[in-house]
Length: 295
Image (tube, rainbow, N blue to C red):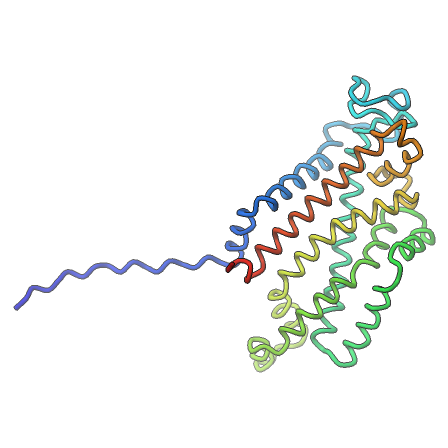
């Protein structure tokens, strides 16, 4: 009779990583996305904490007009009025980033709401909401924003609202396509069969599954909103009581040959911010896309 062999303990199966952990791993492995995240983090930190550490009035005349960069009086030089360009950059970043983030959030909320109802219900609801979307999509966005800002006086609130009200059609169409794709799948039918209402299915069942492309759209909307705000401020339709990067460029555009630094530095700040947001958006798209993760 043969001796029985000792039983070996079976090692537990490795737990599969969660989708969030897998997406985070893919994002961190993307060099351009990490560079964009670091760039944006530095810009946000300077805009938030810079004015706290260097308390000053960005509209105050601190040196002789058209002082070039590199002097002890103003490291980044002064504009045509004698305002310090570095201080204006720090304080202007707050307004520019705030308008960009809030207006992008507003446009995404409007777009997701309209796209969700259009894609889920379909039929007449879809037809009406898509006609409204097409109206705003063919409407000259800059002209409409200029009219809104002019009617209600230029301020950070009116600029933010005007940008949010003209920037949502793309997100609405994206959300509509996602909801049309998910509304007849088995897990949605299972929720209906157990008596779940439309509100629960829309916001708690379909939306979390369709969130990945919408997050990418929201990220890219921030960069577009920053450029939009800079364009309005360049045209003199920004808040005259709030320094912003677009206002810096617009107020000094006539002196670009004799005072290039007053235009170049805020222009570089806008370029780096939009570039960072775009890199983050591309990285999130690669990380949240299952097909790209498998590849």
